[in-house]
Image (cartoon, rainbow, N blue to C red; front, side, top):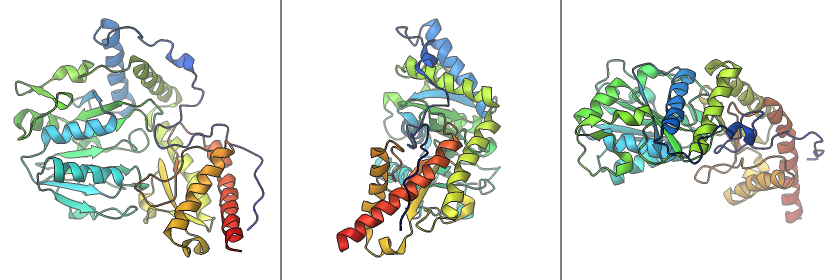
Length: 391
């Protein structure tokens, strides 16, 4: 196949799934108001952290009786803080259809050793949601599989009258798709995902039911300092008012504040959702008309609108085996990086070989439209190289 090298290039070539590209128009001037050199426990420092919490509530439309905390360790730290603090008194079901969900399975099985019910599937396929006993069991799951391109399409499987708690890793879902707060007791995410913030900080959002569990349950295992949410059997309320467990980067806090204010300026949560949907549609439409590529997600109803995961479907390449498929996928990424056209959009290291293109709200649809012809060109180059090597 012969494909002409495209002339148009993405204006912003950053398609990584985390850290993700900065918001449109971002410059270092956005950080000029940072409380640098000030203690995070000073009046100025606490005010910045409290503002971040309240803007989070406003933009994400979080219920007033839910606590919002800034915690260490990014999304991973937030999920594990919830698991270490809350699990134990009930049977736990852990779902995994992507690499990060598999990490929560490992935590439950091998670290906490709570003998969970494990519901795992291959990348791209959701477990049977209606088989999960959310009425009586605790459940740990991701809302949008970061490394599989699969989202949960509905929430009716979560019981309204549940006795257990739901712990939801929403790092690639928050700000990009609706979250049913009444169904979720713990929600976590990191600043470096949909909002294009900087790494190392996680958000931990707790429902009243989650707080009741934390205050009524004493875990059977030691709780590291960075995971401790209680003192004297009561929730440490300061964590949810800006009194963080460890020292946050005030520079990263300022950047997060900037992203939240940008979100407000473009119309809030509905505008963020619309941008992610429009971005993903560019990729989905291209895949629908392109014979050499397909979705890792099997059911179109579960297609992600953030980390869109793709696999090679060209019969000639597939016939040469997994090692060649992996080489071609990596070659596409390397070629476009060398051209300065697109960076860091290869599949996650533990996922099937392919591409993972970030479509969150900070990406511009015009950049994705410019990227698609380059993907066709890069694939044609890789396939020609294979033919030349075989000749």
